[in-house]
Amino acid sequence: MNQITKLSQIYRRHIGAPWQPTLAGAQRVMIVVYAKERERALRAGIGEFEQATRAEGHEWVQTDATGWFAEWMAGHDYRDAYFEDPELLDGSLASEFRAFAIEKLSRVLDAADENTVVALFGAASLYGFMRVSDLIHSSESAIQGRLAVFFPGIKNDNNYRLLDARDGWSYLAQPITLHEAWIP
Image (cartoon, rainbow, N blue to C red; front, side, top):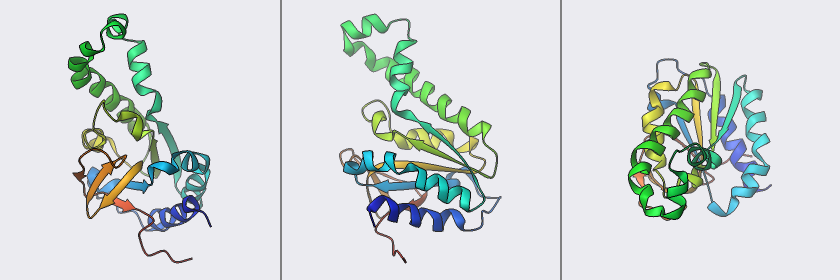
């Protein structure tokens, strides 16, 4: 059995547990951690996670952050100037792109009901532009069902590191990793 299939079965155990309606937004987040080298395999096997979600009686909506920066840049009035001098991006990234990304995720979360898992892919594409922790924290209030963040990196205790590269952050989301005791 491959790692993505094992991970989807661990995910199914989590998603199949009863959902408490009184949880705060931060407690409705699941971070599905996988090796960064498995990104393509995860994307090819994403249907396994959707099937697991639906088999447990929940809806599934996915959103992909991979193209968010390109979309933001394409709509920016100063995009040509940014391409000529990328250092000009520093100020805009800190505020404008951050707001754009939070709005993109929040819009999807707002449209989902309390029985829906919103699956966020493409977290690696945010590297260098904004922190995934900031995106999650800023969107927590919009989570009505569950938010599953597919996270290419590592987790040690409650510390997550995107792409094994950036200093990690501590987050109390429900971790879903291959390192859990897995029962076939």
